[in-house]
Length: 305
Ligand SMILES: Nc1ncnc2c1ncn2[C@@H]1O[C@H](COP(=O)(O)OP(=O)(O)OP(=O)(O)O)[C@@H](O)[C@H]1O
Ligand SMILES: O=P(O)(O)OC[C@@]1(O)O[C@H](CO)[C@@H](O)[C@@H]1O
Image (cartoon, rainbow, N blue to C red; front, side):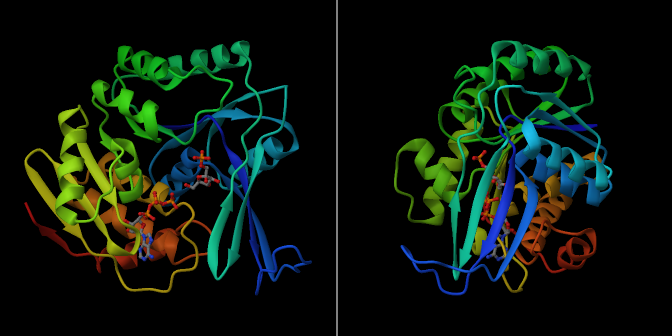
């Protein structure tokens, strides 16, 4: 079973305008409300790929009800802690030729609610994988991800972590199955400017040295790098019209881990990851299975190191 953990989920409110007038009245051309948050996105794509998944985390208020109903409609098992002190955030994704994102801070989580989540995670067993994804709510301790990782490992489960900064850095020592920074996150993590592919690979290798089992570096339209052991692979992205990049990275994690869970090898997982990321980039919502399958045949992988 692949569990996903989203400590700070969201409704993603996607708003499209023709010509954004800052300081003026804008009329929406189109809008869409989707369940969001990184782990939730991973679960939604895993489900479409036919992998077993359960979504976990915190939900509150009417926005939390919306997300629960959306997951139920898609047949995704969910086991969230309901919080009492606020509503799950609404993140605005503004499309105006480019994409501008305004993410909320998220509601407060009490110590009691945090403990309730820890209790729920006692269900994890050997053979399970948990994907910890997204920002850490500011009311939780800075080492909360680390606490959860230690606990999951005691129970024999593997983990993937997709977050930024210190929580990501600290998680490396626990040997995550996968980390997937994009090129900007990788540069930020090491406080450097990365200009060449060689530099990307060098910093990706550092993540392996610090403990990650596999490193995926996503580069949006430039494809992705997989660094594993002494080997480095590059995948191209298939051609297509970009409609939405929100959740492309999460879809990539779903494709990669889902394929491994379904018995695929590392190269098949890499290919499925890239195809899933691109299928989301070419869709209004997250990728559907049909498009992922179609794009999978168009991803070519080259060993470059
Ligand atoms: N413009 C694009 N064209 C084709 N494929 C894309 C494009 N953008 C993203 N993808 C696919 O999705 C993968 C992940 O994208 P990206 O590098 O943008 O991740 P990310 O920054 O973590 O995304 P997000 O945070 O928006 O979910 C890429 O490696 C690629 O396979
Ligand atoms: O604020 P965080 O937790 O870093 O990111 C949240 C978020 O931007 O990530 C997802 C896309 O990856 C969206 O569904 C969601 O709105």
